[in-house]
Image (tube, rainbow, N blue to C red):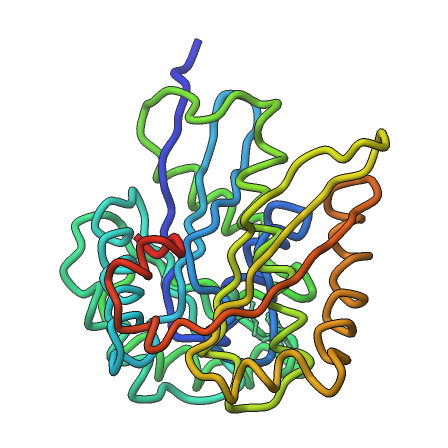
Length: 297
Ligand code: GDP
Ligand code: MG
């Protein structure tokens, strides 16, 4: 009988290369959130691949984005730490364009990790044949030492089985991290927060997204069976942003609630009563205590 195997795979790479899409495709149901705006994913969300005799924990790292604010630096530190602790680093790149400064920076962060490093060259579906992908693979392969460079499409599910095999091969002997029945509610609260935040990103303009954090204050069964009561706070940095989020006569907030509720109901499998509040926390992105309170620790 062979041994049980388990370990961590850190998915790293700059924002928008498709890390979340990849996790969702691998895990087979949406856990992380995708959006065309960078830095949607702001905290580590685990997806778990489990099969006969193994568990692979995918750490969907936040984008290695700007480090101008404390939040930016924290995200970077977290990503680095995850890389350091992982049994494998999967460096994801986007073959719709050539490497950028951000790719080089992201690659440099993980240059010295001891575990196996593979390059996942995503979005190959945009090229109509394999030959056209080659120059991109060549350019990206110059970014570091990779034991393998695997062209994939997270969207079209191309080569994901190969990726799965690569990860499995890198897993050490271990014990299950999660009981199988808990695999489907890996941090529901985080999922709820991200779903709400996603609606904020979709509904507001440029100036807002990065200044908004969502915190679920309360999430509990209501008096009516099958109903979940959720109270969430949207934190912004300035009064002007608070006004935008609330909108004229509360219209924006109402709209956000209407957009988020059906998604939450689908996620939680029942009816949801959603209460949204907007609060100003000046400069929250630069306050360590608030970052901790908002779960960025
Ligand atoms: P992340 O920031 O790295 O987590 O990237 P996301 O998963 O949020 O994806 C960023 C964008 O790339 C989204 O618009 C995705 O739909 C798109 N995307 C992701 N994977 C693929 C892919 O395999 N092919 C194509 N064409 N687009 C993709
Ligand atoms: Mg993401």
